[in-house]
Length: 296
Image (tube, rainbow, N blue to C red; front, side):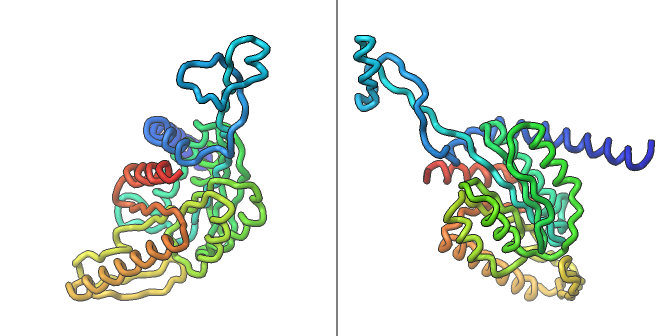
């Protein structure tokens, strides 16, 4: 068997495992929460039935009641169909991971679970992959086959850019997606000057930031001299990780920056989920859905 065929076969096995795991998580943990967190666009008339004790008298269908000489009430159902757009950062910084999984791995897993949660709620799912440019765009559509196309694209993606330009993705969405959608932006936010774009998108869509980080983004291990390289720019920096004072200073500075980010997002009224590569995302995502459900 040629290498290309072996690769395709292995990729199919990986996608199948991801599908099985993601569908199970979506079904058992997130499908109901997703539905409750993102309501439909309104309600529409569905049918009528006989009046039962306790029904709201305002729902009585007087025309049907007069015709049938019995009280009948109108039944309304949620106009459910919505579109979910997954906006995934594929810049070089997302390849970093100090433990078993990289930031990219976590973004892919969360994207798959969200996609199958939308699928189980009969919503459309789309994908936008970006670096310093829009790398891939798959418009939202329905169906399992379409979701598998999106997951395969996430595994296959070989981005042209290395740096991050979040506004490139946000601007593309503003000019192409006019109707209200559910938008999840999955990124480590190694960028600046994105606040205005987020605010503009948040006024029209259900916009959620999924911030992905690694333990080394927040704290350094007590080791020795660490030679660090910025994966996006190639700039190198040597840090004295044998100095407890330096490690504490680094930790304090990173904590300050993360707290500033949380406060800034809160002031911008941006819903956010903070995930780390060294722990399961299930609890944090569930907590977010419960928060959204209460607010809705």
